[in-house]
Amino acid sequence: MASRRVNSRAVKLHRSYSVSELAACFGVHKNTVRQWQRDGLKPIDSGRPVLFQGAIVRAFLSARNASRKRPCPPGTLYCFRCREPRPPALGMVDYLSLNAKSGNVRAICATCETVMHRRASKAALAAVLPGCDIQFVEALPRLKGSPAPSLNCDLETQAAV
Image (cartoon, rainbow, N blue to C red):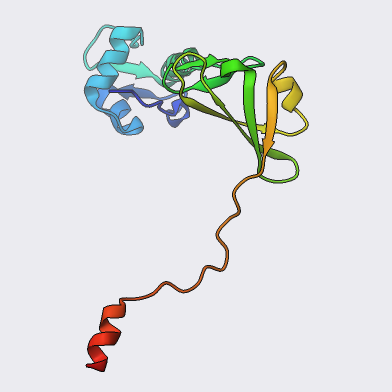
């Protein structure tokens, strides 16, 4: 199961936390905090109960979250299936304009053929995707003023009978 990122700023820097207090603070199980300890989270001392300093917990979780980031270099989009930044297949990209300044970039992954997405401004498009063939596509119109839905029309015929 994929782990979710916890907000490291939920702990106070100058406070000591027990395993159960940390688990309650982050909304995780106590065994998760014990796993963090096995992964390198250092307690204050080797005594019982096991206590953790808030500043050390925050630094550990911040470093752990930062190591999972995968920034996209120019010319790539993030592929959720590969879990890596990948170049678009054949260098072809679609740009769906949302407003006058920004829009969504859509391309196919060259490795696994999954549709990838990225948000980019129209001004920075050449810097974000250098060397790519960009095709500007009109976004689909939004639903506005749709007619009133027909309610159960069978009731009208039953009332008439």
